[in-house]
Length: 251
Image (cartoon, rainbow, N blue to C red; front, side):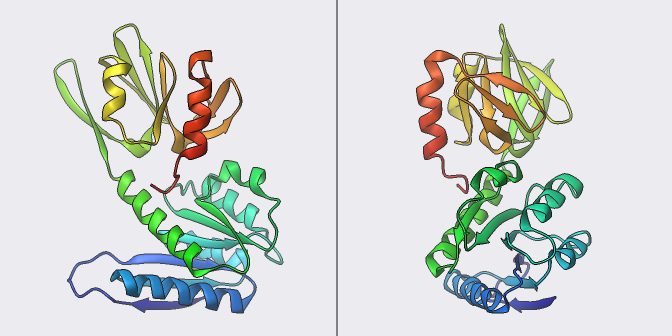
């Protein structure tokens, strides 16, 4: 593993943005690292880059350290990038790091959906693609820090939006569903929706889902990260398809 730290921002206490690159082609790693450093220089933030050439080395390192963004080759020689992605999401339960897959082929899109990558880039990778990925990942990180506030039985509470799988309406009550619990408060979805970030969309008069937790989508239903399957009602189907197609997953 090689590590490079560059400080383009003079304010003390500025968080370091940590970017990992894993590819068995050293020239690809070097090229992407130069692009990442150039973007950090142009946008004046502190950057730390890490390079690995095998999936095994990357997995070992991620058990001990954290990254904000990872550029990950799919066709690694010994362990595929898909297997590494599954290890990151399922074994390490590391969901906040953005993963950008890179490949010389374009036939992996459906296999990658459950890993929820930030995007998929075709080699040779271009600077504008890398710049867009970093900008999207940083925007996503800021979005994940937003907090949902609610009141129930006279008590005030908060939940990070990133932890909310969906909102389910039951008469005049709303259930806030996370992977670990459910919280109930009084309210109506039609009043709630305008207050939510744009990664939340309504798919039914009783359901609002967080697109960041959507594992799969069919014409009439979605499957969420907690295993819940929810129906998309007829009046919402066209709009749901449009919102999913147009949604910027990094913003």
